[in-house]
Length: 118
Image 1 (cartoon, rainbow, N blue to C red):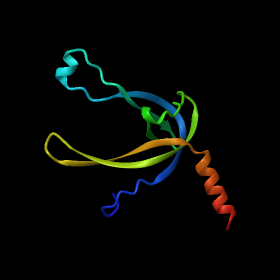
Image 2: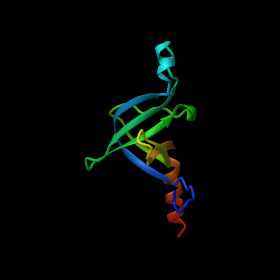
Image 3: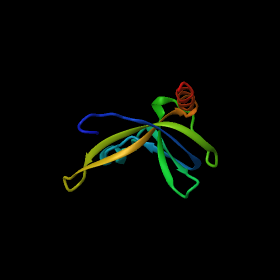
Image 4: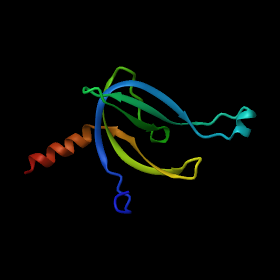
């Protein structure tokens, strides 16, 4: 949050896909003992960038975006999402995640047309 206001800015991220990990909904230990398995909620896609950096982008199942394959180069428009949780010690912890919105092509077209208009 920026000065108490949720802004959710958009960014363009790019890199080579290193890994795709399936993430399921939380299931209590009691339900797990009964064989209940949480539904797949998202896939975390790890990207490697040319400078050795890595970043993770979340692909939510409900958004219906196609998952990239390991080894592919991707350019993605993503929303920067902030959240928080309370840890086991009772401390509030903040986090930031990148949530995929789609291919970066339309964002890049917008940038190009905006720069061309000047």
